[in-house]
Length: 431
Image 1 (cartoon, rainbow, N blue to C red):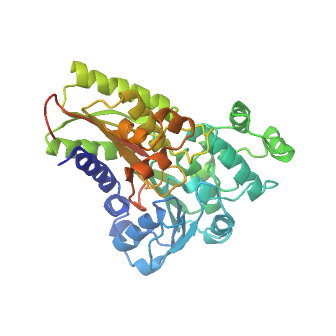
Image 2: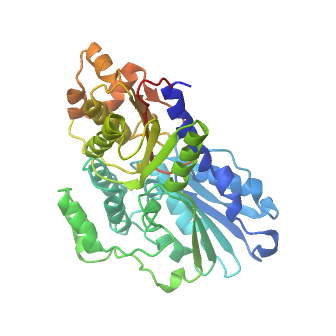
């Protein structure tokens, strides 16, 4: 196998480990534990439609008893027989997502009883898809603030802190609406640390953050706020239900797929191919270009010094880096990482890499990521461009499309955050 084929094989193994068809059935109730009342299936996220399909395919009782509403990103829907699937916009919400989320809150989970079960299917992307603004806040307000935060370099935890305090459905409020039914939430994690209160802004779990913290985030990144939005936060009208609130007494949350599990699957695949594999972290954060330079320094140390690992080997990492968009490019944290990595490696002859988002969407484009190899700097120059200029313009997608090095998967039906693999060849060895 070529280095690029090896890297793609590792990425495919990571995706396979987090497929809803594989992980959802393990967490469904058995036939003897089915509820006496109704079973309402709700959810949001890029993997949520595939999760709903897995529920229908593996429900231990009569699937005709299932009903509900799940919201996913455009292009990520899959057909279901009993559960309604609505596609809407991500990462900035649109009217379609707003209407569906409002219907979920006001009708789908309305008038439930204590014998009913709400099965809530949540994955990354759910924050933008559950777009019901708090009273006095408009969808246009949320769209403008969201766009600014996404371009600011804020972490996902910071962004979701703000989202929760401008929402009528996130930050545990969906659980309040489901009372007195029992709520079982199945989570596919796309956030560093796998914190359920951050994944899709925690619609069914208590929120430990505050309005004051949301204001701190907005001020930190100089996000312009309409006066009524600032007043909403300063008055604490947007405060969310906290852990320990009685509404969560009948709520259970299970992590069913995580970035760590995906990285472990990739490591197993690497060992099958005769390579040692080293997971650096499943929770890396920071500016993509800075994270890339650290990875490049470590790859060089392995290749040139045999420390701390011996080549041939693969370095694996996950997490969610950020991009502060200041240029005219499309951004995309994985391609930004790769441009900076290629620049720092400067054509090192024994290092190849792949970085991609496991949902198939890096930034706002339907491109998962890309690959680099020792020829990337020279081929970039042959296009009349310099890696430094590409990085300054946040135009990784433009470069890798021109080079033919983009990784395009289409909707993967899962979302366990970024995947990075750096392959370091042994001296004088050909893979």
